[in-house]
Image 1 (cartoon, rainbow, N blue to C red):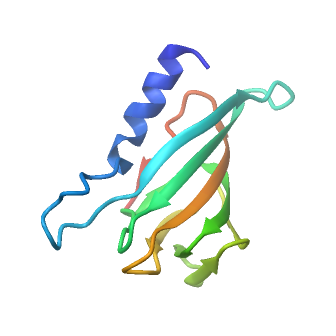
Image 2 (image 1 turned 90 degrees about the horizontal axis):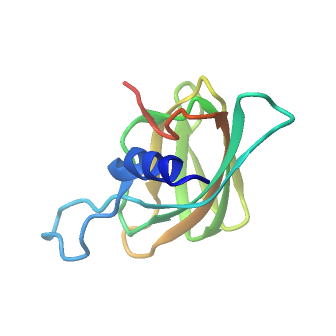
Length: 137
């Protein structure tokens, strides 16, 4: 991955950066998103694969967003709650999976626990050069 691509990815993910652990009590702490791997997919012109490691601190939640990608989620630890617009809210535990399509709007994404962290991996198949996370209403 080039330095430019890495810098662009990091800027796109800034909205998901974890707030300081010393945030005032009652202040929500957002997910920490760490890029693990990015790879052009030469057999699918214009597409790339992106792997992200996500840590939800206790009580953490995501703003409403979309990915404009095929997103495959695998829970490593803890329990998370996910929902796309028009779909059922589901609670996932370690070893369970979730899928979001390119047209889905992610309306619920949060740690199911107020006391324990949750960790998961997201693999995105997305358009090259497009941010991994896009705002949505």
